Image (cartoon, rainbow, N blue to C red; front, top):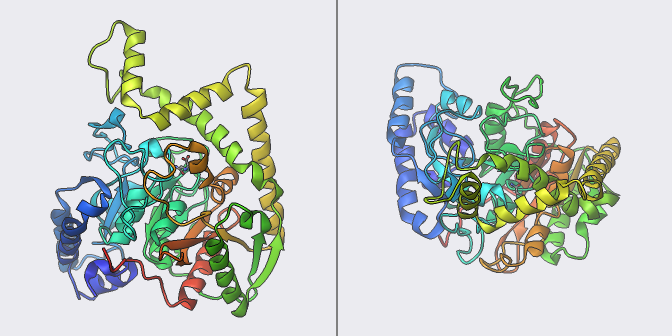
Length: 486
Ligand code: GLN
């Protein structure tokens, strides 16, 4: 097995036992990038200093320093997470040449632990999309089927893990952008509880929904990375004060007596049969190993997509007002006065999907329509949260499909926003309610494309959902992430 095919937990052991060095591992990843990046297109920017970063880790180890278990592991960072001195574009023309003068708070533990930062990952523009087709730069391809999308918006982050172009990646999830691409690319992705990972330095899309989280080849990999990045940050007013534990150390792999809720609304008409069958097969397996399955109902699920697109667009219209050609980023080359400068800058700097969201968001917040849309969406949001809270009185976790279908073809949905938005049917509720959820690979479609299962927990129950996912991973003998055909 090549180094790039191994997961972070295995590589961590190898590095600690000196079975390989950080420089060797990084070299292996760099040659893998050279071999497949032309087909996959996961990166927007590659870091030139990877080998120096790796050498610093090897030197520290040789000097007898105590290192973090993830020291020397190559990691890719979604391109909406600010990285000091490394271009951060949000895959937008607006920020094409923007180099942040500061790091997002999550970068501090990553740099301190000695992970090797390989580069910045492609995404839908400003994280708006489900296919990475709205990137200003290029299309990212699904490593399992190059004609298909990798999902989005963290499509580059998921594709890189599946292609062996990074061992771990960070994504961000506002309505499914970690879990949906993880599902479509056959990798593991965790959307943490709102407030558990600092958002300081994450370029804001919808601040009340956004969360940074890890992607990797195994449940243990994401548990290790989540343990590193979670925790209070005084720079983020919504960051929670909690005693955090090592999630990877505490993975039990047992589901004996675990109560699993299965909401019927997530197995409805628009759901692909292969998806439903795979998730039910997984549920039966968990049941055979001691879990208790209970069918439940979350009746407001049918309003979730509408609610999400109203709230997310409202916040986006406000957050993206900062891109005005004055403070940073793109400015139109010629204009006639201030208003014209704003108009031209924003018309030229943003792509179609971002403009659609800004217009929708401005509309739902306008004085004539605020009560009819935004206010109503906030009421439904509360209802969705209550329904989950009631469900978690009766069960420990809730299991659903991650997406209604496997990866679709590039170009298939891009001209039909409503079809594209339907991709988020199973994921947006989790953000609306601020809950944690993980997507793990769960079988294949008839065409051989990966399918995903979502495990949802109550607030700050990351350990419980990781344990459930880990138990499933053990029962199926691990996930085989890297496609042989690539
Ligand atoms: N696909 C959803 C959207 O387009 C979710 C995006 C996200 O989670 N960043 O808004």
